[in-house]
Image 1: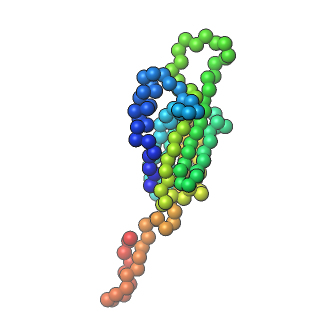
Image 2: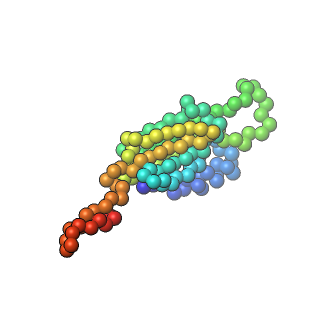
Image 3: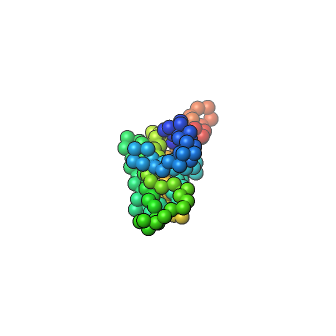
Length: 143
């Protein structure tokens, strides 16, 4: 199971949009994500449009997954900027990985501005059948 880390993240995101704050190293910008279970793995997708794959950093320490990316301005130095609405700077997100997830075998893929992580579920946490002996023989019950 994946657990979110910051209950006020959406409030921070809204405040950042209102005040035009770009992400900094001490106050990273929001990184929108979707997470869902698909079979024997969790799939987590992060929106990182315009971010170079080289600037994406993934770390797992003590079941905490940290995703960090950076996007700078792509206009020439000295350019007179008229409008600057696209988020720039540092983006970061942390997720707590439950004990049922295999943090050692996370797979990452980046395509079209979307970072997709596949986090497998450990074997002992998967549904299994348990044999019950008694009466007229053994029966299989899903457990």
